[in-house]
Each structure stands twice: as C-alpha cells, then as structure tokens.
Image (cartoon, rainbow, N blue to C red):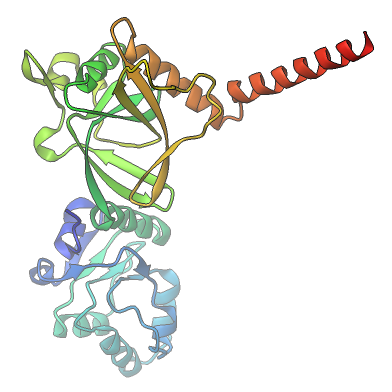
Length: 316
C-alpha cells in the first residue's frame, strides 16, 4: 500500500537533519509532497503560487536576503509563510533561524530543523527520503537478486523454482535483495527500486527445508537492502509447442508502475541450468547498455553474407 504522507518526525529520524525548535510539533506535522521549496519570491511578498504544503528550505541566499529586511517586515512575511499546511522550515549550512522566524513558527506550531550541510546536499537528502517513502509502490510475487551489479527480478508461477535459482546464484557470489515478495517503488520516471518487506528481510523459503536466513548462512556479502530493477526474468514451464526466442532481436519489456523494464522469458526444464542462464542474461544486458548487441551483429553479418552470396551467384 502506498504511503500518502510522512511526518516531520520521520524526516528527523531517517535523515541527518536535526531539530532546532518545535520538537513537540514534529509528529503532528505531515509531509505529503516530495518536492522541496526554496522560498525566494515569498520573501519579497509574492505569495500567489506559494507551495505551502512543501518543506521550506532556507539557504545562504534566502537568509542573506531576509537579514536585509526590517524586523517588522521580516516577521510579517514569515507569518504569511506559516500556514496550516506548512510542514517545517529547514536551515542549511548551520545557519540559525532569526528570532522573528522562531516567533512566527512557534505561534503556528511549525518545527524548525537544521543541518551543517550545504543547501543542495540537504535538499537531496530530504528529497531522496521522501521519494522512498511517498513514491507509488507495488508489491510483486518474485525474487530480486543483484547479479553482477544488475538488479534481476525473477518471476514465475509458484513452485517453478525461483527461490532455488536465487539460492544457486547466491552460492555463486551474487546477492539477495528479496525473496517471495518484492516491494517496488518508483524512484523517478525511469527507475524502479525493489526491497524486501521488513518481515522478510534476508530470509528465503526453500521447499523441503523451510525458512533460512541468508545473512546468517552466507554472511553480509550475500545480501543487500535494496536494488534498482534493471531486468525481469520470467520463468515458464517448457512447452514443445511454444516458439521461444532464438536470436534475441525482440526487445521485450514489462511495465511496472508506468516504467518499462526489459524482460526475458526463460523456459524451465530438466537439464537446463537456470542460474547460469540468468548470469549470462545479466552480462548480455550490460553489454547492450554499453552499446554492443550480439543479435544485431549476427543479423548484420548474415545480411552481408546473403548479399555477398547473391552477388557471387549473379556473376556466375
């Protein structure tokens, strides 16, 4: 289920920012917007498009401008910025809020936060956290494994061997992200990130054995907390009547949360080493990202060969 809001308390608990004033209000103030606002125009008195529902970030520029204002004018503008929707004010670079800011924020019961980091860094830290918490989410049945630095989501019918395949990949030195259920959130327009539900973190179900702890058995190197999903592998039961991809010219994708992810179908039958095939699929994916496509090269060479043979036959 998607989380529609975080609290200012969540931001303090999960990022490097600290509370300056109004700690008693942090749990009451919710944040529903991922974007951060830097209130430059608002300090001049222009509030026509003030994004009051966003975290308001003050850097050196905003603070320097505010210092040039008279105390009364500064307090009046800051009062306008303190709306019932405003989650919090944040100061970067270790800047301390003015007494007018503290007064206005306290009257409106809005917490003030701060950090010694640069304004851009503070903005990135808060935005990354809010993206993870507030972005659209979807839970999918499957296994997510880090294979050579490529996030591979293994899907398929129950009992087809997803966990067993992932276990063999882990024994080969790759890393488990999530088994059975993968929680996926959209980091941006082109990126999906998967992680395990808290109750299943580092755990795997192996039929005949039961639940095993991958970190305990294989060490910390065998797990990771989250991973970008770059490739989807759909395991299916082998069928003699199915025409499987033989060359690799088709660029198949699967859409999750409006993001198209490259996908492959791998048929499963006795004698096929699925973990080895997935390793090769991950390496081939990386080659394609670097600009080399073996299928395209084969098609090009085949076309040249047919053309050469045709010309040779014509001359004869």
